[in-house]
Image (cartoon, rainbow, N blue to C red; front, side, top):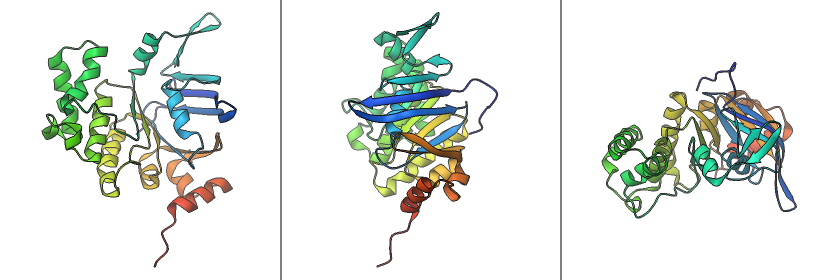
Length: 265
């Protein structure tokens, strides 16, 4: 999780706006993420965090501003001074370079764990089965689930399914990983095993943008924390600094609410 600051940002968002009907969800977001940097997006529900994450991967189209990933404008080709919307196939090709892990695991229930992992490399990249299987087994080893390769999703715990989902995203060898509250659907006792995999991934140098309510993870693993509220970036800075000593009153109130201990009975 060491960022490289003198090169092209991996993610460059300039004045990003997004509307759903009359509801303006993102109101001019500016954010750069450097290669190797881990950025956690925090804030109350409805602040626009997940929508912004989906804009990075062009799962949502922006209504204003521009988004670049790895030097390329997301969703468009620039020809001269004009932007042209990419075809569906070109969007899918670009999206394959960005891994994304959702709240729900989204594994194919009729496929084994191994089949889930090799499906995209074989279909999208036309990889030979042996190569795809070798990478998949290596990644399952890394997330501690090599022995579950022939199991079906229904035979796994929620934490195991989420670790498989992370391994599946990594099978496409992405340069950027996006996580949208990956532990929010898990029972509390399963959260730690997923966060450990994410921490190991961060330590390996993967560029990561993580929407999370896990403040300890954000403090200990992220390089930078970005606090969002009402569609704006309200405060950002070094993770430990923002979480332990926030400057904005809105950030202070949010962190006080999520970090407060339950009252003793």
